[in-house]
Image (cartoon, rainbow, N blue to C red):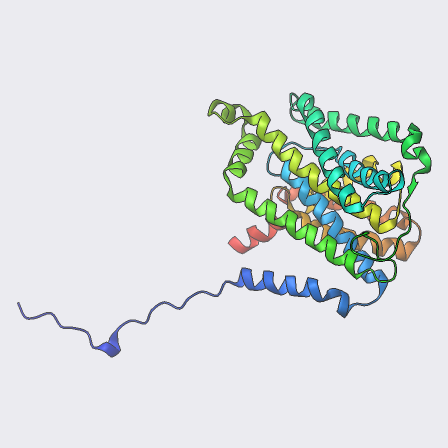
Length: 334
């Protein structure tokens, strides 16, 4: 047998080219665009729409932690939004305190409420849990309307202070509001991303798929439901404080309505419940649509946005239960 021929150096097969991480590139471009947006679009209306988009995207993402990952569909998240708004507002109007301290206090109260609500309600499953959260939300809304200490139906007007980050008020330039809510949204996305990859995320998905099987394998399902609800409530309460500081007026019909809880749910479901980017996609589609119909038709937009919401929700429920993000993933798989 003759000697084995050694291939010439020039005949060696080239090393495979490294793949460009297009997902990371796109994410970086989107982040740069988000940071630069206020300087490219200087009209107050455009900035206001995007601030609302980021706020509702954060609320929907927080709801997604409980409902999307853990499978506990709550229709009473307005309770936590109102807790954050009222706590920080009362902290300023009654005690003259700092709004950032009020934000932290609102988050802590919302977490405590989530434990108080979750302990009895997590004994229920499926649509019974959703109905129970609706009942809790309506009870809190009615109490707030009749509770004079927190302003009752008249609501609360926050004191006007000088523009400063310490006082969380920016009357002359709204740019700080934009970057504050963008930072809160990014933080909520990062927490969701961590949950997806952590042990807690696997536990939550196991609880969602089959709680009985998860419990039989040693997963403390009640504890992890409470953890998911506490994290969700914390971000929603922070959103409530931001809203109060942004508009400087709150009342039960603006921060505690059932319609707010349903809107948060709809944004996540249409975008893709249980996915990282679904709530943001749903908000990016529906919040500008709502603002456009309001401007086009006046007032509340003649409920055109609600008709479109209903149609989209029906289409998603029937043909694409995983939402728009799920549709994109299916198209990519070919």
